[in-house]
Every structure is written in C-alpha cells, then in structure tokens.
Image 1 (cartoon, rainbow, N blue to C red):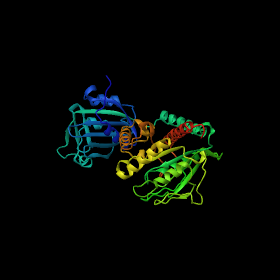
Image 2 (tube, rainbow, N blue to C red):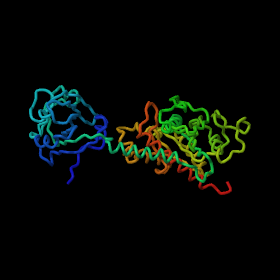
Image 3 (tube, helix red, strand yellow):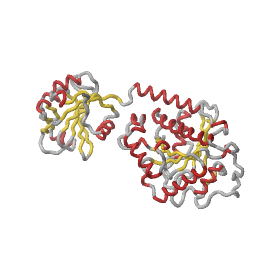
Amino acid sequence: MAMRTRLTWQQEKCLQNYLGGKRFCLLYKASVQKFSSQNLLCTCDSQGPIMIVVYSENCVIGLYLQEGIRGKEVSITAFALQETGFSLCAIGTDSPYLLFLIRKNSGLCILLDEKTVAISPGIRKMLRLPDHNDVTSIQECEAFRCDELLDERMTRGVAVLHSNLLQALRNYKPYGDLVQQTRILLLGPTGAGKSSFVNSVKSVFRGCITHQALVGCDENGISDKYRTYSIMSKDNSGPLPFVLCDSLGLCENAGLHTADVGHILKGHTPDRYEFDSMKPITPKHPNYIHDPLLKDRIHCVVFVFDINCFELLSCELVAKIKQIRRDLIKRGILHLALLTHVDSLDRITKADLIDIYNYRPVKSKLEVFHKVFGFALSDTLVVSNYDSEWQLDPVKDMLILSALEEILYTANEFLEDLPLNK
C-alpha cells in the first residue's frame, strides 16, 4: 500500500513556495516504518535535499536540509505550520545525525524513538510556537526528498511545446484566405490587462520584452484611443496574419461607449480614433470608414479580466458586459474570456503554470467566473502577462501562445460560418 502524506494541499503549496519551488517525494513515514531515528537516517541517506516534518497535536514542525543528511555540517532551516500562518528560521549548520540522536541544551532535536521533539525557548520564539515546555509529543513523522519542480525533463517539454506553438502560429492563415489578417478586439474593465496582453504577444514573437502599447495603473486607464497592433516576427519577415485591437476600458458610467463597440465591430472606427465616453463616433468624423470591408471588421472578441478582481466589479458593470455579450450573440460574433495575472494567485509556483487548468485555485476561479458572466469553461482562457519582467520566460510564453492559438481558432470559426454572399 502506497504511503500518503499528512500534509494538506495548502500546507504543501506553502512549503513549496517558501523552499524555492520544490516537489516532495515521501520517503519515510514513522507510523509505517517505525518511530526509529536509525530507520529515518538510513532511508534518507544519499537522497539529496531532505525535508523532515513532525506532526504534534497543535502544529506541524519541520526541518529543511538543503545538502541532505550526509556530511559533518549542513545548513539547517526550521519551520512551523500553524493555523495562524507559516514561520521559519535558520538554525545554523550542524551534523544532521545529531538532530536525531542527542538532546541538546539549545536548538532542535527530533527524538523519534521517544516520540518527542525537543525545542529550545529561542527556537520556539522564532517559530512563534506556544511557550509551554521544551518537549513536544510527536504523533507522526515524515521525511521527503526535495526535487526541483521544473526538472530537466519538464524544461525540455516546455521548450518543445513553446517551439511547436510558435511555429504553428507563424504558419496560421485566416480561413479560406477571406482576409489577409484576422482582427481580434480586446474588451474589458479598466486595468484588466488588455494592453499588457498586446505587449506580451508582441514580446513573445519578437524574442524580447516590448512596450509598444502603453500600460499603467491610472484608475481611468491609459488606453484612450482605438489602436490596431500588427505583430512582427523576430526575423522581420513582415506582419503575422492577425491584428490585436485595443480599446478604452469598460466602466459603469464612463469608459468605452456601448455604441462605439458596435462601430468597431462593423469596421467603421479608424486606427488611433480618440474615444469620447459621452458620445460615440459618428459618420461625420473625418476618418469614419463609411464602407468597411470584411478585412476592417472584427472577427473575434476577447473579454479581458483580472482573475483577482472580476468578483469585485459593480453590478452595473457586470450588467453592461452581459449586454455587450448579448449584442455579440445577435450579430453572430464569437467571443472568449481571458483571465490575466494568474501567476499572482495564492501559493502558485512556476510548475503550476505548466498544468494551470488543473491547478485547484484556478479551477475554483473559473467556476465562479462562469457563474458571474456565463462564459463556458472551455471559452475561458488564463495567462500571465509580462508586466514588470526584463526577460522572457518560456513557461509564460507557453500560456500566452496557447491562449492566442485558441483565439485564432475561434476567429477562423467565425469566418467559416459567414454566409457565402458576404
């Protein structure tokens, strides 16, 4: 029968973050392999970095040995997990064997054969443990090998997928060659990450961080013009066959006028048109496109939301977005949702981004989002935009490219469904 850890999912994610992104492999469990220091030491010998966890009635206490248990002196970090939070402290270098064999006057010693752990008052204070006595009874003890979350195999897999996605998107063609470039409209609340997504896509294809679309944290937003952004490849071979269209943010009583959405969808709005939240564009505007072609129209709409903030949107704004969705459905325009800042969710690690849709907090967020806005789970994408980074990250790139691929597939479905006479 396979051994299972007593660590909860939340505790494990907390430890992964604080220990620099680790995957834990359970090697020893006292209730199965006996409460024996010798058994623990023999099991963990030559296993590399080791984490030892002891469970008492009121808290979880542990040690992290970055160099493993071999050698005369290794760096040792102690930690405690309690309902009030996580605490840790470095307790210097020592022989790992002494941690299990000798009750010391100071520091920390796990006495497995006696089912107790001796902790000095100084360590107790640093770990914010109850100051009852220096000896705590042990209910269970577990030892884990600590592997890198992104090992060589996973890194290779990300690199291959990254390369395949880039190639597929460079080879993308709008359905039936009906247009030279697919046009994607980004809509969403102010500050959701529309312009950041534009910059992120441009950065991935250019191979370096770019900031062509202005991004900021002003409460009224930065984008006040309608902008259409072509995406250039790294080899400067010309624009790729899709365009990202950025717009003024949606607000309750200001921001992008709902009538302007209709003009953009039909292709009447010129690039660099400056929005007026009080009145939409009219045919009298000098650059109004009176007879737009299919190439001027929007072929897919993407609603962009901050995954941390969509639940805080006002009822008025939620109603406004739902009304725009109803108008899109009447027009037969396909649309998706894109949730940004997924990397800022609690206790997330880089390895979680690789399989992000199976990450428990993300699944919970998607279910809540579905209840609020009605988007199907399959029509809801997540990304981590480039906001403050100076270098590209292949895991982030993979998320951005995967989302873009789904968006372009959806645009092609719209083009494919157009009546033949149009």
